Length: 220
Image (cartoon, rainbow, N blue to C red):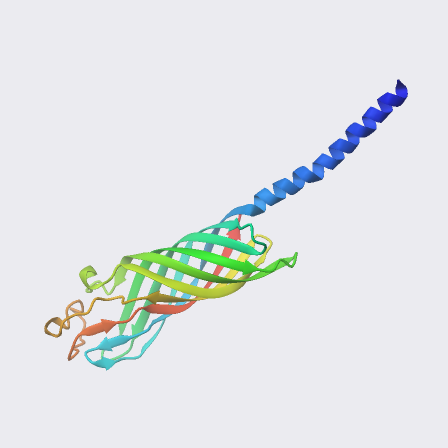
């Protein structure tokens, strides 16, 4: 009886020890499968085209910011992660001419980052492609009319970064696709620029924003 009692105790202890790492592994997998984080960063944006009348003007880069939340899901394919985000993004460009014009448009953006990375235990470098949609919620100068802007925007970003501990560094280049502003007819070429001493000889045409974005994400 004592023999069977000791044998039962050994079997029970062995079962507990075997079950513990399995449970821990499952918990680790569950915690890594889905993560929520907060992010912030800076943007260096310009415009693909800026025309006052029929003359293409040069614009300088605008330094903006972005902040938001990130949701990271591990995919069944090894090394692949999908990470949708909800961000507030400030973009713009600076025209230096007879009168300096600071163009700024803030967006609520929803990018979906598809990442392909290599797990090196201590850190994970990755590449990503990031299609996104956005809606403009703020504009500068205020003299510009919302009717002259395409508030709904879409585009794509390409870049990469590295995961380390609970942190993720992102570096990517974004292109807004399409036109930021609707074409303005010649007879109303200065519409939307009231109060700004710029008198183009033809329509004002804007391309769209593009530029570098650098972010840091902290996952809980």
